[in-house]
Image 1 (cartoon, rainbow, N blue to C red):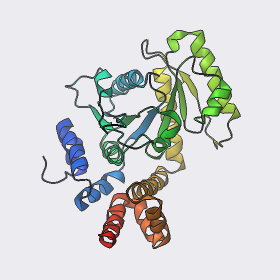
Image 2 (cartoon, one colour; image 1 turned 180 degrees about the horizontal axis):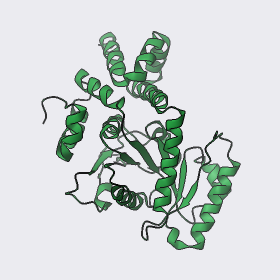
Image 3 (tube, helix red, strand yellow; image 1 turned 30 degrees about the vertical axis):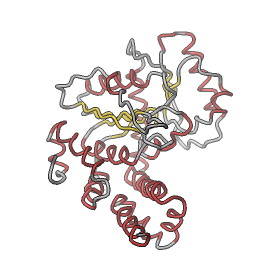
Image 4 (cartoon, rainbow, N blue to C red; image 1 turned 45 degrees about the horizontal axis):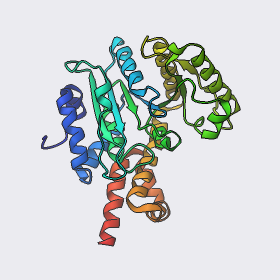
Length: 316
């Protein structure tokens, strides 16, 4: 185990073993002030984009992730994958098996894969996952976050991903069903998987497009594209990457730094709510809230560490 956290330059050149050790330390030393300071450094660093994949179990997210890795590596991008696996409601444990479905070259230092448990988070992402995404984003060109796949409850993904891709499989419903599920507010891009099924896939794409056109959520200048992809044949994967890149470019034009600072404030609030409940969140926003939230824009983890230390002193 490393005695202290490395610099960003060391982390970027230290290989997969060092990166793995750092992510492990984030979990084992989550409450340390040194951990918070390190995470603040990496989350404000200029890095790559984060692509979030969501959708129901069995839709083909792992296979699509595999195809995306190949496409990104063909473009000589450094790729990281964070596969979030569901935790048992009985034991709290997780199999962490999603990574076994990825056919990556273990000797390729430009591909890093990590599995993490969702723990008790219905949103699909634990605090450890958020910290890991911040680190991977700082040192990789492309970060792919493959979530648990519980559909509507995965709103957390929007607060860590730059681009959210909703995966839909053929035969999963009509336009009305998509609207009833309430998931059309999530995606920046929709991927209809298993496009090799032909007419059934085209029907699904048409249904999704219909649901998007009926949506009440304003999309400003971005129109959500619907892309038919097949992980088996590789068709449509390049189009999906191009659509994701186009969306990321719109964020850059709008001001990516400001967007991510707003994400950091959400992270702070979410950590407070998870640790201390709504009463704690009310305290953070009400008493000295402007100071806490202002600090969180640039230093979300140190802001939470400071706030949590104050609360624990008062409680214990």
